[in-house]
Image 1 (tube, rainbow, N blue to C red):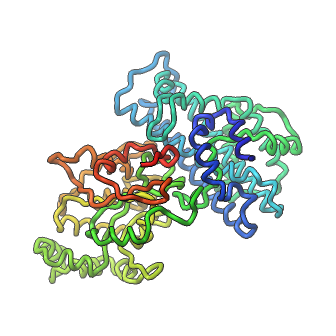
Image 2: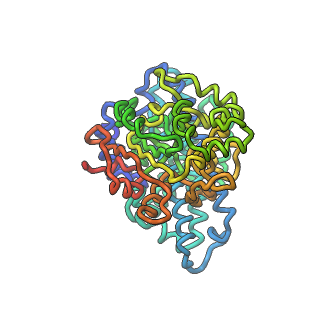
Image 3: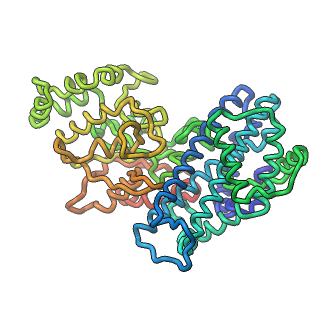
Length: 526
């Protein structure tokens, strides 16, 4: 009942999302943990630690977005314009990408703050104080960001029209930006800030150093921008307001985030729609170099990146599979010899170049499955099993229209990326750290050794990236044309209401990139 009353009080951005988000989630999450007070006592500390880390990551993303906006004075004027501009298609795309990514961060921080709204019901005092600080850090991070974002956007009258357009790929209606402004340019928001700050002064606790520093900076930003001018409150009165008013209803996704990049789900925890039997059937069709597009519903994943398909990986197979696939190709053998391996054996070349990586990939992983996939996850670029990687809700297998030699070149590059850390900044310029699609993009980048793939780059949050959804969009645009670069090998399409992933067809896959990012919330029975 608490969730229903919270939605009833939404008068801010939750109003635009709550219509469809709340209706689905209030029933779908009935059997799931909705807030921190419902967690088993032994799990509270771990959740607090992971949510602190998530707040820090999301805040970094927000700061990066603001830095990118300020670094582009042509697109985001540093001073107010008298009249609206006529933006180019490219400029509109960049502005909308920044806006959509910003809403992702707001959604994520709302979920964390909402999850810790019941901090006062935690029995342990230290954990109760820490849980409050998670909520406070999430609140001030998004509040400070929103005020600065609005300040920049309001300098150009044309943005007001553009950002109020419907966001089909997020499933949000017209007037999103107006609702966003109403949420943050509101006396209720300042009152909640004052209440939370009054409570925070009484807490003898501090957040992890990085989060604490960010929290202190965000408070200074809020005060500097004149948005902290709510009523002066005592800690006692502030706590009453925080507990009773429920200002921060926001996006009603209540389960929090325990790992960056979506390791925590808000519903159907511990299960996915694609079965092991389906994965085994897909495995029979795979060839080294195949690109896997994956989607897991109910994950707050890839915050800041757009589209229905949030993740990509590459199937590389076992040594035996690669030997069978490559050994009879004379061109591959010649290329391997040109790399200094006299016998022309690709497996020998991979082991010579990357002995530790190669040997580590020979040992079975969970449930004795072999590592056959390379992907970038939160822990970095790693080998995983197909049973782990493809255990998703939707899966598409795309095969590059390339020679075996070109695929061998890509595999050699991919082996070199294993062990690199995950790139939370989504910076394709550097090879020091990598995001999931960056592995695909750079492994298949055309060069003197291989024809490669011309994968699309889009500017998101000031950086050129290749979102996984853009690979699906590219497939759709190129299909049936001379320039087609990929073939669809298999498509498993998750249908929540059937509690299953069904065999999808070519037509449905070609349309999949157009789906809302939070597709599950508007999905219809197919």
